Amino acid sequence: MPIDRPHELIELRRAIMTMGAAVEQRVNQAVAALMEKDLDAARQVRRSDDEIDRMEVEIEQACLRILALSQPVATDLRMVLAIMRISGVLERVADMARSIAKRAMDLHELQSLDLPASLVNMAAASRSMFADAMQALADREVTLARRVRDADQRVDDLQKEVFAWAQMEIPRHVEWTAAAIDVLSVARKLERIADLCTTIGEEIIFLVEGLVVRHT
Image 1: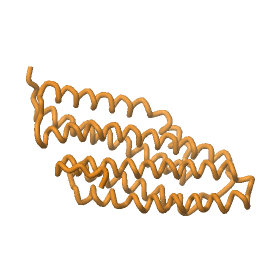
Image 2 (image 1 turned 45 degrees about the vertical axis):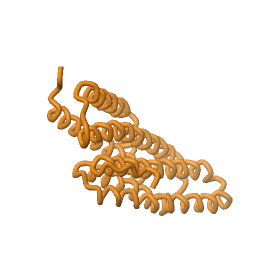
Image 3 (image 1 turned 60 degrees about the horizontal axis):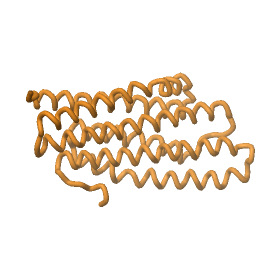
Image 4 (image 1 turned 45 degrees about the horizontal axis):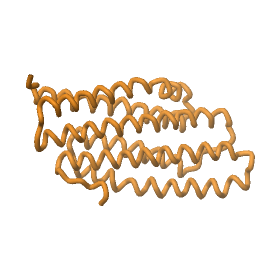
């Protein structure tokens, strides 16, 4: 039986924005756990993984249903494909936030060093990229989506600064080695969040303009 495609697409769009808001909350909580030593925020992030997984499955099922029963074309088809891929990206961002929260708890227990400024800046930049990616998705704004892509280089540069910090500090303070390894792990997760935000930006460009820009 044919489905009500406009209604289904509206619901699909609502579902992906709801998932995006839930993941953004987890990213913010993970950063708060890291920067403010907010252990309650860290615990909330670590407990909330199942909800995001459920959202991803429901969105994927809705996309497959539309593809099978409605056979959308042109912009509608691009929307379904982009949303299905973005839901998977959002699930991976949530996984990164969960890992950051775990490392934040470890660092709190170690209590051995101040976070390097480059890591603090990475956290702020990655969180900003995610917020911009969600705004670009809500508004279908390709200019903002392209700015998200461009911002990824800044996060990459900051990650290199974190590595340089670790190379300098570990030989000088061997007792900080475990904490420095946690810092490096957090930096890798933040860099991965930035990469995933870039992917969301690329999917938005595909959705709006029909252009595949992943390798450009």
